[in-house]
Structure formats: structure tokens, C-alpha cells
Length: 350
Ligand code: UDP
Image (cartoon, protein in one colour):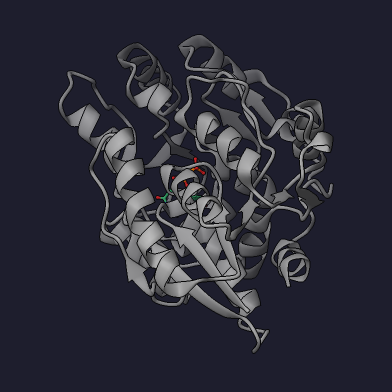
């Protein structure tokens, strides 16, 4: 059997690492990897392949630096060409990027079966490009691998009981990766303070809105007067800050790091502040409270269990949550399937 996986962005490499490792246990499955090129810098792409021994992509489409339409369109065209050559039994796509929707659409039109990993997630914010990608991808997928019961319920509410597809609660494949690498950390090449906050900012709703970005950075500057903050900065955010009047005081800004360095930081930080989807869950996997710098989250079970609080981009709310919010300290709850997602996924498509 031939499975063709499509990946292009950092969080997809991290998820794909778990699936490739699982596929290696089945001699009757061949995996073909297509890298769309959405993320291409060494520290946003190559490092993950090296650190996590992800097989070298069979195809590198090198599509990047374009607007949504051109990027998705070029991916669609190029992926179709690859599918016509490879004729896989399944196309596997992850998450909610332009690579995800392009892969699903190309495959579906050629009558190749589509498996969507991280299906059923919703922010209910149709201004997010990710939300549009998720909804459209789910609708044309043959198997929807949901990471949580919440995701399954989202699909039921949207009427998926009436749609010809299979819905599986596979658990969250990011937990597979987190558990596998939890003890394989690598120290980043910076001084690591005793007590620090790990922060990331990269979501378009924050980076492309100067008021929101200003407010978040002001809050971080304020908190950093008393607690060190390490901020591995996404290239998109770095570019916007560089071209603005925004002031960074007190923060330890570093280049994006590899996954093993993130594991080191997650193992040692006291708290996470982020607008990243993946990092909200990793905070939980590494038993750290999380302040989410967005107006909503797809990972609502973290909020319901008080491991995470949503504060948007409001400076006062961010500082207030950091100073006073009492998080749930009991992280021994199974919300995401405990690291068996890749196996569940393969057994369901085999
Ligand atoms: N990550 C990383 N290095 C960094 C920042 C993030 O390896 O410098 C990892 C992080 O641990 C998580 C993933 O990248 O596994 C999240 O990716 P991102 O925040 O880009 O995307 P999202 O999860 O929001 O889609």
C-alpha cells in the first residue's frame, strides 16, 4: 500500500515525524513524502527533518512567499502532477494550512482517498485562514482523524452523520511526538534562567494587527520586569517588528529553535504564553500552565479543565492572568489519547 503525505509547515513536520516512525513498522506500506515548501528556512524546516529523522521528502515543491491564492493554486497544480505519477492509495494531510487544503482537493478530484489528521477542530472564527482550510478539508476527506471528543462533536453538529465519511477519535498525534522526545531534549545555545516564561507569537490575527501586537508586546515587556521571558521569534513576526516602531524591552528574543530545544524549554519553563495551537497542547503535555494570546481556541478542553486561559491581546488581561490566575495543577488527565494516535491512524487506513 502506498501512502502519500503532504507537509509544508513546521507543525506538520512535528506531526509527520510520529506517522513516519509508525509507518516504518509496516513493511507493506510505502510512504511518499511531499514537502510543499511553505516553510523552507533551515530553522523552520530542515532542522525538524534532521532532529526527528523524518525521511527526506520524495518531492520538494518549493512553493513559498506567495499570497494565499497563488500559494494554494500552485500547490494544487503541483500536487496533482505528483499524484498522477505516484498513484497512492491514500493521501494524508495534517491540520489547517494551505498545503492541507491543496492536498485534499488535488487528491479528491483524482478519486484518491483522503485522510485528514487533526480533523473536526473549530475556532468558529471564519476570519482565520486556518478555519477556512479546516472546514473545507474536513468536508472532502474520507477519514477524519479527530484528536478529541470535542472535535467529533463539532462534526456531528455540522451534520457529518449525514455525510459519507469515517470519523475516528485517534487521539492527538502531537502527543505521540511529545512523549517520544520528552527525554531527548537539547539545550538551546543561550543562557537559560531559573524561572522563565516561554512565549511565541505568530498568528496572523496578532502579527497583522498592529494594535494587538503592540498590546501583547507591552504586556510581555511589563511581565519581563520581574520574570524572564524567552521568545523564539517566528520570521513573520520578526519581519513585522523590524519594520515597525515597536519596542522590545527586557525580552530574550531568539531565532526559532528546533523541536528538541523546544522540549528543553518546555521541560524547564514555569509557564507558556502563546498564540500557537500546537504549543498550547505541548504546555499541557509538559505540565505547564498556558496563557493563550487569542480570542478563542480550538483546544477548549484545556480551558474547561483550567490548564489554559484565553486572554486575547488585551495588555491588562494578560498581565492580570499572569499575576493572579490560579491554574489547575493536576495535569494527570488524559485529554489527547496518550500518544497512540499514529498507531490508531495506520490501523484505520490499512
Ligand atoms: N516550535 C518549534 N520551535 C520554535 C517554535 C515552535 O519547534 O521556535 C514548535 C512548537 O513546539 C510546536 C510547533 O512548533 O510543536 C507549533 O508550530 P506553530 O506555532 O508554528 O504552529 P501552530 O501550532 O500554531 O499551527
